[in-house]
Image (tube, rainbow over the protein chains, first blue to last red):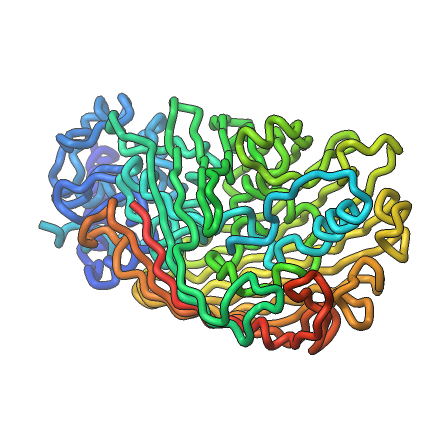
Length: 126
Length: 462
């Protein structure tokens, strides 16, 4: 019981740290990160899909559900993921670990601060 | 450039044959461009949903970004998942050119205003693994349509242990057409050049590998491992005269045996910046006269090294540098036996360097240097006063590309580039003065700087 409590506490702390890292992102810097890392394949314009779906409104969206985008893998559509900040953080750190058979050809972004910045930018898109 | 690898008629008349050989060797495109100017293909943007600026530096073809490199090596098949995209595009260009002095052969005025080329592209995804890039063009002063460029590709991705690889096949009509980087002849600066910028009668030589656009057909196999290691090998041959006539291709003569093309490169995409370094090799024996029964052919061996660098950052300030050096060894069995050259063995060395800056993917400045040298051969380079083909100079260009971005008006249909380009020659065929041709085919002294060219151009595609 004691071990379980410690484990839960550790998980909660980890989640808190993760949320904190995302929350600390700078949306202005994130716009640059988006241009450098994401913008060739994803648009920030509502309803505009490229090789990947628009990322406007991605926070809180269920994966594989952008209506006018037909390029999703079955794995992505069936993943059940709802894109929260920490889920996006995990996904863009190493996409194939989160959606192993996904179509996105992206190796991942190692820089945690840059991930936080781009997530802050994505959160700002309405 | 609407370049000087112009259509050549085959003849067995000795005088015309010598002229043919000299044209083959000497009047190949100075800047190594193919039979048409470089390319802007909005049908790819419509297919992928991406803007032109995703694939091209400066929002207009052809200088590729890493995204464009991967799209090309993927066989032009990436898409936004939507069906029903029509793989058709069109392009046209207009130019006003002022040269230092009108050509002595009377082929043009000092100032010329004309449409330069109009092209139709079939370019896009055909199946999940097959795509095409092809261009048919009618050029200034030509009443025919020629199949300038053809690159039909099959590509697929493979997982090799922990490594990811793209492998592919390309059926094409130009050895460097399939190259994904920005330093070799088909794809390097200048992407547009004046028809009137060079002396059409006398010109510096180019390596054979850069002079075969629309004159050969070949099958290449390539691989791109971990988005870094690129290797390509191809076999080339010359079409029959009848087949060339069918597509209005360039007749350089015929190969004796096959031509062998090889290319390796290392590419590193660091997102904010990227670079590539590569090696190139080509070997072929060319018999300029198709009817000749002697069995003699001129042998060419080309070896080259090239490098590219791009700083892309957040795309507001983009810097690029592209450079190449190619040396060609020639054994002129055919030409020398017909007294078309003094030497049996010659060589040429070609160096190119271009650097560009682009602001907001809209405003561009480019500076380039070209330098071609070769073995002294007074007969082969009869236009030269000292027998040297040395031709050196520089190109300056400023351009404005208002469209082609994600939120641009008319995207992805409307695309336009306006620019001004100046080409200056410091040496032309061996020095500051050379022998050009007059209206009667005789020789007349002309200064290198007489070929200096100022061009205003409008280049548009849909």
